Each structure stands twice: as structure tokens, then as C-alpha cells.
Length: 165
Image (tube, rainbow, N blue to C red; front, top):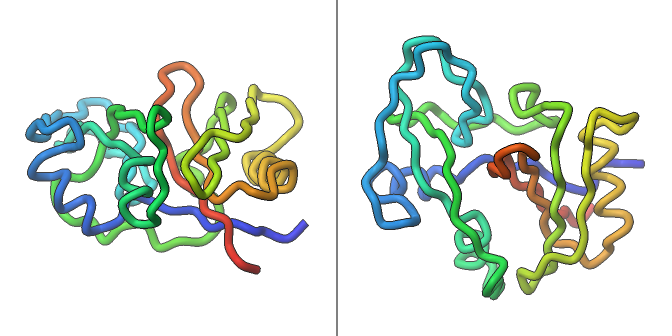
């Protein structure tokens, strides 16, 4: 099956805002990541040992709604994400980023209106993340976006959006 979605990091204009005040109205919390390896939602990479990164609250559906006119209502949630403290150039795009992979992921599908309409648990089974995303989009033809989240903490990892092709 051909890829019918694109993978997105947090948009550069949103990152500029989050570096001043996050989606909970707080200033970013600067953290020295002694060990490195934390997932960064600005470039969809991982932090380096000793790197200072920002921990911010991020509301992915609220941000998506501002851009698309969706009304997620009670499905809009705010959660913690790590980003670089300065512009890092962002994510160049392409296939699913290796740094965001993991055995345990949940995929949540959203309609164009912003309601949850389906999902899939990837728990180290036979499906790759790409196969899981393709399955969720195929099973939910009305899905406009699918979010990838970690199972243990529920953290937002990446957004995917259906493409016209």
C-alpha cells in the first residue's frame, strides 16, 4: 500500500511561541539532559548527552484546530514535550524518523472535526509503525490526522496527516 500520509514535527512558528510561553501558559523549563536520548519534537531527533533542552506543554489538537478550523473540544489535551532551546532547522521530512520509533506506541486517529475516531496499539508485535499508520488510515477513511504517542507516558511523539495522493 502506498503511503497516504505525511509526518510532521511541531511547526517552526509554533516552536517560536513555545520557547516563550507554552500551551499551558508557562515559560519553558530548561533541562540539562545528562544522559541524552530524549525525543525532540522540533526535529524528530534525540537529545545529546549534556545538551540543554526545553520541556514545554504542547496541545497538538489545539494547534491543529487553529490551522484547520477543527473543533476538538474535550479531545484537546496538553502534555509535556522536549524541544531544542533554539531553532535547530527542524525535521527535513521523509519516512518515519528512527528517533521516534519504539516497541510500544499508540496511534490515535482524528476526524477533520477533531474527534477521536479510531486507534491502534503497537506493542512489539508484527506491525511496523509504517504498517500501523497505513492500517489506521485504511480502516478510518475519514481520518484527517493520526497522532503517534508513547504507551507508558502517553507523550505525543509526532503528527501525521492524510495526503491527497
